Amino acid sequence: MKLKNFTKTKALLIVALAFVFGACGIKEENEQLKETNAKLQEDLARAEAAAQTLNEVGALIDSIDASRNLLYIDMEKGISGKTYEEKIRAIDAYMKESEQRMEQMETSLAKSNAKNSALANTIRKLRQQLDQKSQEIEKLKENVANLQSENKALIKTVDLQAKELSDQEVQIQKNNEEITLQKNRIQELMVQAKKTEADAYYAQAEALEEAANRTKLAPKKKKATYKEALELYKKSFEAGKKDAYDKVQELSEKVN
Image (cartoon, rainbow, N blue to C red; front, side):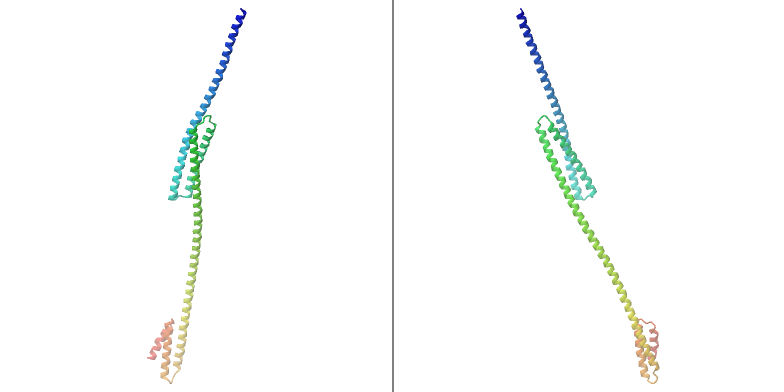
């Protein structure tokens, strides 16, 4: 009887132990399931966030393209340096925000427990596009910088030429003034010479007239002397001496 009870007790103990160990196994399995579910939830959240970020980055890249194309058009038409700087700053802001979003996606993908090759490929393609846009924008900036440098050099050359032209105009003006001054001096000298010539003719005519007046015994010689004096008075008058006019009238009567 005792042996029978012992056997029964042993059997119950084995069953109890099996139940206990079974319960422990189920608990561990449940914990693993919970942990797996939590990781899946995290991956799902990351995937949803990545999808949203992908859309945002795509929109930003489109904005970069649109802004760059508009800038090309504006540059062909001609824009001010201030407008160019404003547009470049806007593009740089798009580039910076796109870079930040890309880094967020790349970090999120690195932390993900699941291997999502499609998402990784999409992120890689967006990264390539963004890098390409960055290179294009830098090339545009470089071209604009070269154009600005050329424009500055051209403006400097034009300024120098304008200054040189202005200096030449000033020199020409000075030369013209000097020429005018010399012409006036020559004119004065000519007037002075004419006046001197008129005075000389007048003085010679007076001397001859005086000689004729003193001639008493030679009427022909006297008349001839008056004629010589008359011609000199005429030359004096023609040379500008107005006083000679009266003498011309007076001697004209004497020689006729």
